Length: 321
Ligand code: DGY
Image (cartoon, rainbow, N blue to C red; front, side, top):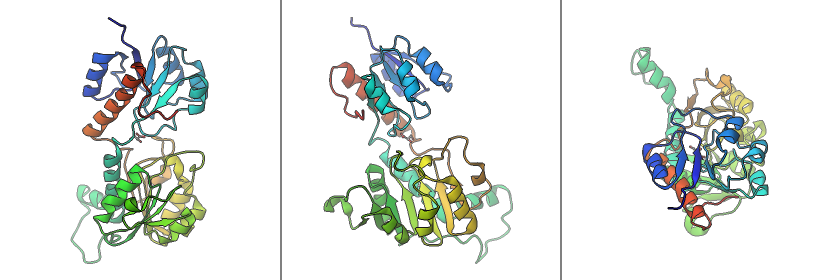
């Protein structure tokens, strides 16, 4: 019987994914779910044929250069792949794949949770109930921002941006979007395309960030762009923390220029900018966008589909580098 490929799996994955890994591969599992350093990755990858990492693994050029030559493919358990230096992988002839599609719905769902939670002051309300500081229903108490019928600007109209638009239409929101390319007419469903984000921002009662992290989108939402948003706008980010300049966002939340923010992702997770914590007008989640059992199974299976294709001598369906 042919030897099964050895796969270094850097984090503990759902049971169903482990079962498939054990059936088809010789997996090196991390059942304790310890966070590996770059040095750990290099050492543990010795003699392995593939890596199955997560966004928490920093596969920098320095780490990739030291990986054993036996590693031929990096199949990340994530749609985002900015944690992998693709140029370094390419230079070593290592393929990189990701897991698109399977987390679109879960991420769009949590975008709506954040949008509603930030608009309707869910964090403050939750605390009042739990901490017994809720004294009475009040005609003017805890007033939030109305969502139905408002304008939602989506920055990045890929799969997730489009799934957010679909959900927001259920709230009769008017969709505006900024994207590298205009969508074909049959995919716009009445959404208003803006050639530039700067053109779109003044039309956003809500702004949802749904673009990939890259050098071009680093700190894209800065003080200058925040000023283009109408006073009282609400910002939601389920993409990557690095797209937002935290100091600028915190400043606008404190000054009242922005009414609120709903954030699932942060720069330097989990060591987020501590100045978010005391802000009452934020609704904060610990990167839960794809955190449903169905979605995490789907991500694992998709990562394995890519490995299966590679080891069957085919081009993996989700090759990104
Ligand atoms: C991804 O897959 O990139 C997500 O951020 C994980 O939730």
